[in-house]
Length: 516
Image (tube, one colour):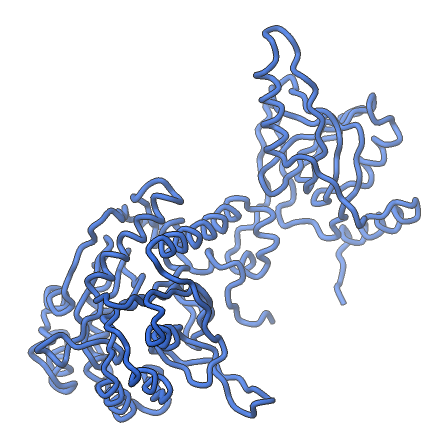
């Protein structure tokens, strides 16, 4: 049971008093004829249409919203309410309402309460668009005050917000309160929705079909991550929350659905960081007769389309950490950099000259004695170490890093003449990975051998291991067209385009440790 503080107990008492007077503090019905911005626009339209020197036609409106500020001044009260589109002022006056209703409002309505108000739109002496209230109604009584104690309106009309909710941990735990008191964060999630809509529109316009694949899967695959495990009672078997859509989407290519995509949730049972959340939104697409070069071109054009459509610019400022901001330009084409060359330039180690894990480990230690890669790591993981330690932090402007080691890319085609390197790229921006793509492997015999190699080279509990998927191999044996595949974290793209340095800021309900 909740423990109420003194202020909450006062509000609970008001609820009892309202009901005793026959007023329901949570009525079933509500009415609104205009949003705040629609009412202001209607007043402006009436003013523009009025003949010069004549008053505008009367604009009647019924508004609804949360009380954010209130200033009783004897026989009149100025109140600001907020709805989903913004704020608007209410003007309550004894002339229209009578003293009894004025007293009722000032005594029973508190900051945070939802109110319905009907009246006429006017302009005050300060020029503010305002509803002159003739009638009002309680819509919902707030028991707990919002973390923002109040909005103070100064004599010059300036609104000053006091005690805004700022603590990141509390904001993430109480997102409902965060959204209620920090309107600029509501804008972030509106932009996120617009970003996803633009991604869909671009892919739809380019001949892709949006599909849905299983979230509960009998066998996980398609990425290097540890899955979440659950149990299906009726089927009497363990199931996995998907870590990727890949293997199911590529099955559809076998069925002659040539261009498919999905935007949805993936689940990976791994660490939490500024760019990782166990549950996240992913975009994946697969296109028959594409290779990774065609996917590169489609990717940069898709991101440019999102920038143009949602923001009207391809240039953004991204503050990765306090005092460290980057000017990011998503104009096409993006820079292309081969992984081998990039690692050589930043670390001094030539990965092509060291074809075994043992040799590569020795080369790293010899070049960087203060670094400490895992001596038991595979060659692929050692290359990943070099990437993260030396190259990745330098990739600030949008860059396609391409040609990856085969042993960390078991689903990609090898470069002709180089069996240790595959046609894979990752897109990097602001020093972290944004997207990942391959020229997809469509040889079922090669794919089977790679699954076997992975099982031999990695420990059973290694999150990099891909389990052997017999049904996926069966699908491939029916014949899979050559194709290019792509995956991108929608959350990370939103971070970059809305200048939020933490993934928590672009997830409505991020994963958090249990509150003690």
